[in-house]
Image: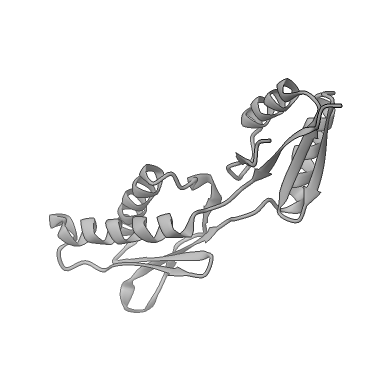
Length: 163
């Protein structure tokens, strides 16, 4: 009897790559002419980014450079949720961004429902912040992956442990 094939659906942010992107962004912006004498501060506090700039315009420029560095390093920017900018002391603009890792219950239910509605011979099982999909046919698993890539979710999905 053939063993079932499986894979895991996860949503992760590689924190080391985020740190590297922050360093590259800070280095690039401190050397740029239009940022001479400006405040450029990007901090990583647990699973949250804090971006500090002189005003909203500079803040947007900092975010643009940071997001481009994150994309180059393979960090899913869909998993970065920016809040509204706030004005800090001294006329500085500040913005927080949550780094989302893991699949929350609501999105996990959407994913499992989409898999069940596809009527494929696979079984989806929620395991904390990831989902395991098992089935006898690897072709069915491939169909699930292509189905999930088309799904519109607020997070980026990665497919791991394909067996």
